[in-house]
Length: 112
Ligand SMILES: [Zn+2]
Image (cartoon, rainbow, N blue to C red; front, top):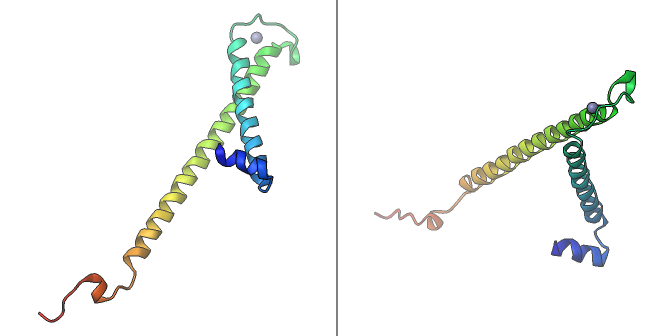
């Protein structure tokens, strides 16, 4: 948060500010959608929707589908991120194992 405020004061990193606004708007959208679903869970059905269906039920279904799609996208993004991090970790480990070290660095005596 301190970093975000500092970048906001300096106005140097506009990408950070835009990314923060996007993340905050996504979170607000999630919370408001969940609130709508919770508030209208026990509603009185009407016939104002398409083909005489209940308009509130249609909205709830739309929000649920949208939220499920976002959850799936976030889940796959997290899986790909974890795979990416593990690949970086493994590659650094392999590189550190393959470094050419001298016998002095390895503390090996050859005059025994
Ligand atoms: Zn309904």
